[in-house]
Image (cartoon, rainbow, N blue to C red):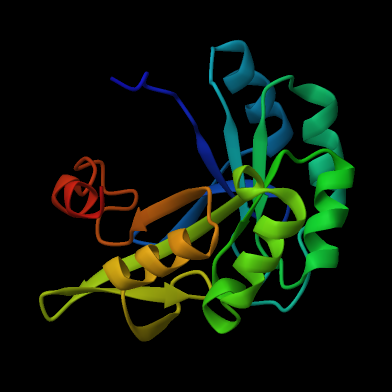
Length: 191
């Protein structure tokens, strides 16, 4: 049986960690670097940072955040948001990130998954999937949950895995921040 790992995921907006419900009503939750240090001291196995407005705002992930986190923690961490090409991933890796997470760019250009896996290894590539139940089916959503696609979640995850995604970061928008637990039905189906 696989060991359980604790991997906090911090959503970052305007340099601050935020928490919302169903991807809206965001409220400040603290400094991401300070929280990273606290989580690492409390025994987290890894960390994930998602710059949740980078794609929507058409900008890159903040390199300063990556460097600051790398100075504070000695556990692996993943960074995502605004990564659109190989050069973005290479810059983040060279700044201290252990993995990168792609979402909207992967859907727009699935070949990016193949290219990243080939260049850096599948263990470096995390494909984030934001999903919401619509008319009885789960659909992939892009740009921080703003745009629904016609892509069914299960099909997209299978494709991402076949292209070289080493990990999937699946977020049920219906359960996000509600404190009602994980979407165990969806997780079981995907697993």
